[in-house]
Length: 103
Image: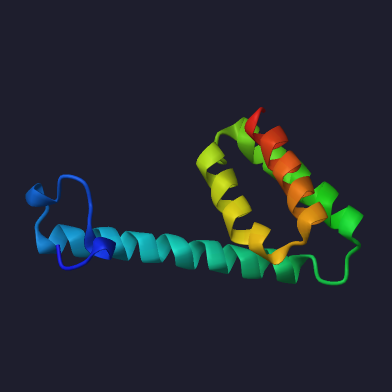
């Protein structure tokens, strides 16, 4: 381990190639979230916030019921968007995320 950033539990069993694969997977996941964010933003350009919210919730509920949206995905979405919101919006998003997680 060269720095705290490189630490992973049970590191003694992980060779450098495995470690690189883990980092690449995390980078791909981040890129996937960023790409999804761009797609969502472009799809709802020009629509009212109420119309956008209804559509997002309907799609999220369908995906949750179909098993293609996990609670971890919801948490990742919240973590990605919450820093861009004001306090009221963040609280509303948190309520929506909790509602979706309970489906």
